[in-house]
Amino acid sequence: MHKRVQYIYGMAIKKYNRKEFKKTASLAGAGILLNACKSNNTETAHTDGIPDSTHLIKDTVPQFTIDKNILADKYDSRYEMLRQRFNKNINKYPQVIVVCRNTEDVSAAVQYAVKNKLYISIKSGGHSFEGFSVNDNGMVIDVSQMQKISWPDDVRISVEPGCTLSKLYDIILPQKRILPAGSCAGVGIGGLTLGGGYGLFSRKYGLTCDSLEALTLVDGKGNIITSKNNDELLWACRGGGNGNFGVVTEMQFKTYDAPALFQSHRFKAYQLNTERAKTILQTWFALMKNLPESCFSAFVLNGKTLTVLITNFEEHTTALQNILDALKNETDKFTLGNKIETAKALKTFYGVQTPIYFKNASAGYYSDFSDIEN
Image (cartoon, rainbow, N blue to C red; front, side, top):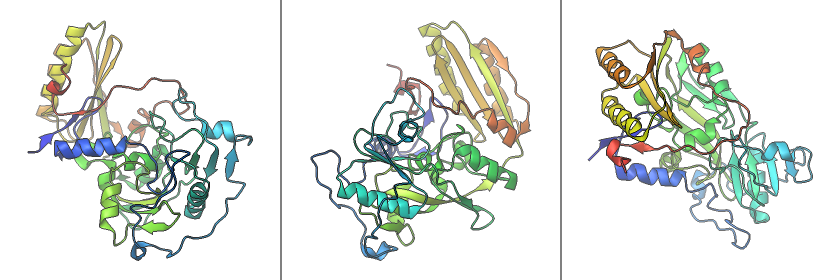
């Protein structure tokens, strides 16, 4: 049986089998250790799960050396800046950080890590709330400088993993195309896609990974592999977790017609106690079952203040108006948003773009209020 799944800091994406969804979610949070690399300083490297040579671009492990211009250790002047993540509460100290410029650099880095028995973490945008893109005493493969975008045809884009969402939108929106991705400006497309990727357009177009059609990655031996003629690899990388199958260095996506206009509405409730917060949340879950697919909603509780956001990129409908009217009755303040150009509207959701101190949010996918009532 399929159930519609909702997100308490967002909204439903598509219909998923609940057991499969939980499996995918657990994979995404399981860490980013490459299968062929060591997990601690006493474990030896292994090569389980490496595809056979029929899927390899190169039949043998290419022999590279690490370029000192891209490798930083604890004595390098760049080290402190490179190890920092978006959440400044995360304080970890890798042994080396390799700032990769291309797929060959990544291949060299993986080989170096295997040879020196270093745990690998991978950074694209560095926005992992739990700090999975950095480690202590291992190697960080930093692909944040790999940001190239090209157009194989009019509806597809080829993107390197370090490309941030703000850069992505700056390039594809003028071409009247959209990719259903997130809204925070500094998030890297690599980490977002491999973890699933949801956002303001996802209820109609799916997760970011649903639009992924092809990729190139470096496996745990340093071999360069593509998903061509390897459907299982592509399937596994579409939300199966960051770094589980290799270091992705290029992705190809299909895009969609970008909406010309975008509208957002906000509701506020103040000085909440537990009972009122619970009542509004129950109402929100009930209303969201009828939310049009062109809409997105977020329920954001911060202390005693609640903000409910509803966005829409298509025509205003009776169903949407009924939801707005019901939420007005439950909250203290309502702000009706104007229809504005999509590219301009998205910038209002870009958020803070410099590292900050913050505690992790409580968020998740739920089918209805009963999932979290306790």
